[in-house]
Image 1 (cartoon, helix red, strand yellow):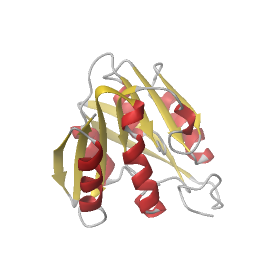
Image 2: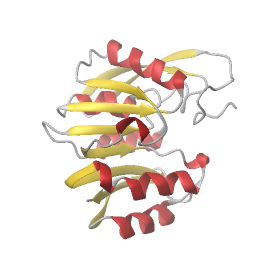
Image 3: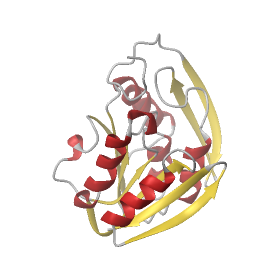
Length: 195
């Protein structure tokens, strides 16, 4: 299983450093083979990071964190971040990225989707969902988000316009009080569902 959404990708480990400028700050990330977006920051994640709503004091969940770009950036603007992923290699790299970027208010947990945060609530859940894992996974992310959000909390996600945007938007419309398009560009859309 070489998929980035599997627990133990079976591709040989290779690492590459990426340096990026996001939300007015410089970041350095270790990326790894077998983890989503090896060797670069993908356009969808970048669009999400530049447009995600973040507030001082918020508790944020970076769901399916990969190498941790969303959580690391969010940690500069919020109270605390929990980063989760089913991919053990991703978590190892995410931990390195917390260290490299001097992040003290974030933690990394292993598990599938919401399992690592059972019974916990957040002000925002932010994700670049694993579209290639299938519609059932996307559906689970959206329909279970409200039970992990405080009142008025946000599910923020990015999706390819031609790969599931209509499906995700309809799902969100059915499970959130309001859905807003925060941004669009490079073939992606960023949505926020308000619980």
